Length: 60
Image (cartoon, rainbow, N blue to C red; front, side):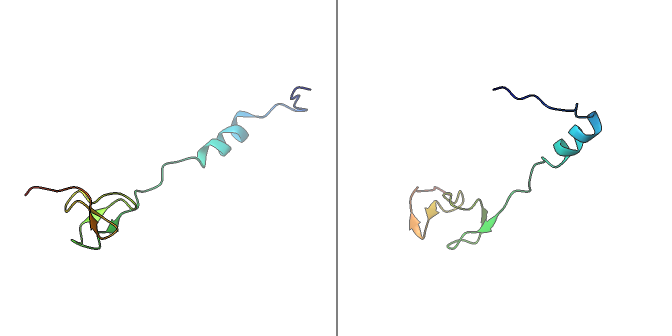
């Protein structure tokens, strides 16, 4: 069985659905060690820590 719509969807009705799909703002959190803004669940670029442990050594 294939999809067989009863009535044609108008352009306005179709575009109203598409209008709700948009980019959301970037969620930034403070690093627990240095306080720099970073993406959640990622290694901090400023100090190289994740979950209060040093993962990457960062040179100043």
